[in-house]
Length: 196
Image (cartoon, rainbow, N blue to C red):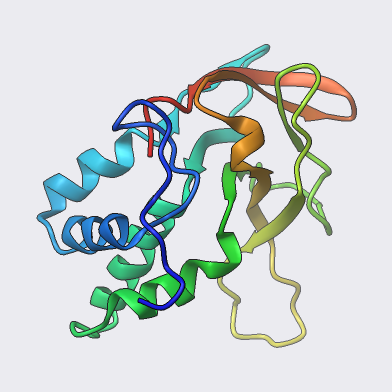
């Protein structure tokens, strides 16, 4: 593989990867081709429970998406679409925009009677002093339409994604806070030394 180097790892074999190497992508392909139970076990390590400050059904879950996990997700998606022969290079190319990043993804579910027209400005923060996100995306989730093209589609939820520099996050436990309008709604801890 041209210009493709083995992964630089922290000291633990199960720590977050700084760079995704050929061996790591091959492992991702093997995981993606594994049984449903094996894939479920792999993905379960990346989801963490939220400790909400007050009861709130809006906050569903938060999960980490590392480069390795993104490679597994890409390969799984290719399999679902019936593409069973693809190369390490194709997966590397697919995850290239995420090189050096770890994404925290927050899934929200809104009350069905909501009148939201845009996604509220939820934020995901690591620690009290950073690192700060490189990028944040707020993606609305809409219900299926009634067939009337003029009828507005109700927003039933959203996915907030915050990308962080993987080197700044490092191999450590980090306090994660979910905030809205400067108020902490929930918190949890993610141990980046236990995921890769």
